[in-house]
Length: 505
Ligand SMILES: *[C@@H]1O[C@H](CO)[C@@H](O)[C@H](O)[C@H]1NC(C)=O
Ligand SMILES: *[C@@H]1O[C@H](CO)[C@@H](O)[C@H](O)[C@H]1NC(C)=O
Ligand SMILES: *[C@@H]1O[C@H](CO)[C@@H](O)[C@H](O)[C@H]1NC(C)=O
Image (tube, rainbow, N blue to C red):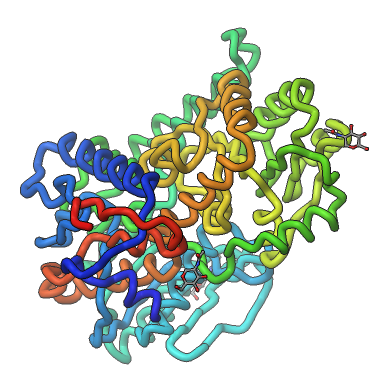
């Protein structure tokens, strides 16, 4: 709470914030990219982000062309009653990104006093009792296969509704199918990946599996992607409000899917800021425990499912090439899947750890110098990337629009590459040449940036404001809110004192 107040301080002239040159650069880059973003959109009404980082956002929130997470919202006293449709709800450790997002978000909103009713199934597909914890109510409505039985979910939905109407209905992707969404006036959907991005992903995979165009296998997946995209564009308009988790997806919805600008909003996924924190000692202990030799020069790590479309063939080849020239590099692999065995073949510079529990995962990030994300899936956002950055680690990742426009928005945060082996190797080489001090510095920049945008607290507060706005238009005009202040961006760094970015000192 204290933190929140601090981060949300208004921009009055009395703040002398410790700030580094890299911050200024970051902010300039950030604001430049926002500015470019704004000028690329034709219908910009007001230049609400014009180079001065202390600009207040004065206007209708529906016109915000940057993530809502960037704004600071004060507390609200109005309580909401929300219905949520989610494909699954996390039970056990192996839950994926979307359900983790849903549970983080709705636990936070319930904790803020809103009444939340979730219609879903357990992620382990086994029978479980419904959950009623304070304001959070989770109803499991499974069919025989363990996925959501929409009719059953709707029966429960209507029963809860009979005790008092819902202020808004939220669905995680198509958990609430469009033909049902059409019948409800107040539906917002969060897209965690859209077919336009999936098509991009299939294209990359095609280029990688068949680099010379030998056409040994038909391009089935790629060919099937286009009709799916067409279908998706047609049915998206059945949902009233659209929330995207990256700037680039928001643009695609407006420019390609033809959703009205005012119905498209960007709210970034947040990661629990208490779960992933920098802890050097924990990192050192983790290295020791898993036998990372003390004389290695750089430890890189990868986490997640070890499957082809997460880019493991790419990392495998790039690392085999790099380790020949730089015998001091070491690779830690967290996760399970078919590529596990291939990595084990790579010799003493690779250690495969298997899947890690959340607590171990946090230590794993801390043990690294560089987090590598080789994914071939530009859709959505990998939470591991955010988690690593929360832990104060710099990252090396493909240059997909969803990533470079929203997460790794500048070189000061890490390294990006085109998804091919040559470009990957080049990026790895520049990280190795930069050396551990530079990597640490970028890690601090990452930590500060994600802390200002990608925390669970910021996400919950942005969603809270969104639903309040949808319930009552008076919340749309948020004169009081300000763009994130510098002090939020640089919470940790109180060593160097320099002028504020606006020239006052
Ligand atoms: C889904 O729920 C409805 C209503 O409870 C029920 O009649 C139907 O048999 C269920 N369908 C499946 C596939 O479980
Ligand atoms: C680290 O030490 C081990 C054992 O002393 C040695 O075999 C290895 O070559 C060293 N590695 C590097 C990168 O110096
Ligand atoms: C930042 O300042 C606080 C209080 O002034 C101090 O306790 C803390 O150790 C400082 N942190 C760093 C990283 O210098």
